[in-house]
Image (cartoon, rainbow, N blue to C red; front, top):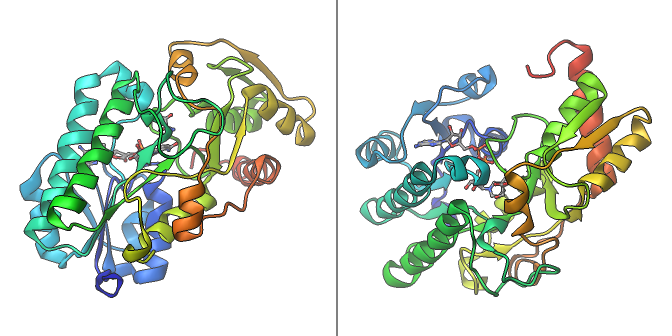
Length: 326
Ligand code: NAD
Ligand code: SER
């Protein structure tokens, strides 16, 4: 199958993950063979100039069909979604994009006999009844957020399409992703990115989660690596398909502050929890990712300290050049 992964469409390419996945896929498969698409116009000139871009609403199936036909697409990475915090503000929009959008992509897989679909899920599939520490892959999925409900439903839909129609669709449950290129799009783990921007800009930050809220996190290079590794894994080796736990490291806001202080001793942080605290309290504090390790060889490279050092270096350099937010 993988030898048919020649023409790739990334939906949601302007988001936190899509904006870094797109250049890596272009490097790997050729600029002209990787089409970036999003409902919004890219802020990054590089994304626009390095390969094709199409304006596309994932809820509009005929427009996805047109792009597939135009570029002879055989593989779709679906990065379009409404994340947890935004989803609680607008649950209906969250359902529409995360469920109707996913169904449209799955239907395209059948209509165009696509080779492969990559459909991310999240640690938000878990809820307060799930074992919180070292959360197993196969466990209780009773989320209390609309985002979590859509992600459980999305996983089940995708697995149904594997079994019922033989579609090759696969996905992993990302933890909170930390990155220096594109700001996150409205999740509960966003504090772990914002804190670096504010540390570099003002030397202080007000965190919207409690100091002791431990959540699973991952640095973007590991996120991209995990995505590519699963995307390129041999289908015959997969027992799971759309619900792989992937883990890197876990920390609390208090521990992150201490780590930042190693490099910026004067950094100050206050804690003023808001509605996102309840979301965070319903999620695991750490993740067991044995199936990902056994079925496709997952192993993270980054830890809290190496991530913190790299984030501060990258953002400080941009800040000095007067383009922190680019
Ligand atoms: P993001 O919010 O940063 O980006 C989502 C992109 O989708 C945006 O560019 C947005 O414009 C686009 N989009 C929204 N509605 C659309 C529509 N109707 N049609 C086309 N495009 C649309 O999200 P992200 O963080 O890059 O997440 C990518 C995937 O990874 C999602 O499935 C998300 O649930 C999952 N995930 C992300 C994290 C994280 O920490 N970033 C963690 C767990 C799971
Ligand atoms: N980072 C995501 C969020 O906070 C987890 O899926 O919504």
